[in-house]
Image (cartoon, rainbow, N blue to C red; front, top):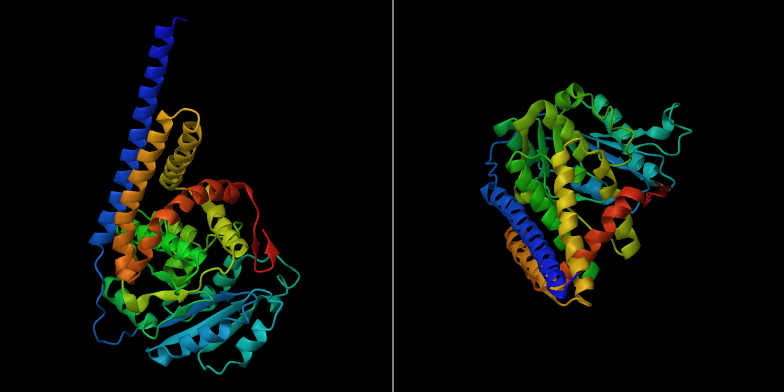
Length: 391
């Protein structure tokens, strides 16, 4: 091929690549603006002073939580809600420490315990699914509204009051609530906090926009009747994770716009960051592992799109070491991602009063690109440890 023809072919391929890259950039910017618009349209709820009257059951699934469970139970004991109108059911999933004993010895009249080890059909099973425990608790619950949280969480004293006030005013069948991390001054802790707050913002914005893709079982509420109507976790009970998001997907198919997101500081549930990289990695692999089971292919498409955006940044950077024009493409992609992500993350962190974390956003974003590239295949194909079990 003549040199001029080769040059023309290279320029043609470069033009196509530029079109692809800038199409990706434009699509990513529009996606984040879609989330930003949803977040800004979601108004903070004002519960008022009237005391709600709905009977509530708080369900807490636990396994090997002896170092956390008493703190949570004390938080629940101090709730500013009529003690005759709420009960707590803790479901112990074959703990091998003294979690079960601590729960049974705790002085709280509206506390009940379900030990899965007491069930003859489950007593010899060492790989009991978390969903089994939640389902048993819900079916035994006396409350109209089910609220779930985790043993390592710390709800404020107005958590039940605010959530139920929202339920009585708006009558949704499911309410997704906010979860945030306590302050952690390490780089890993700040990375987790920024990443997690962006997920919280995306969940809130998506539900506000009528797109039900994210929620967190650490702060979730739904009516018992709706849970039974969608047949609980049936058809998704074989999946180790997903007791929150996949239940929401089932609810969305039946109830559509009766799913809501509660934006209120008194309704935030706090938890701690993972203290080392291994624990963090196992947690995120567990979260990612359910992504292959989503029925709503829009979620899969968005995840694939975001993954491709991050992957091309790294590929263009690597190729750019030998072919400098690719460095410019990598720079434009990363700059666009940095700017639009900063805009969205600022809006979310401002609500949580964590804007100071944005000083670390540049190095966090650089690490986050690599994290996205690695965590996706690990979640799809890898294994993880959770509560002493290999999944």
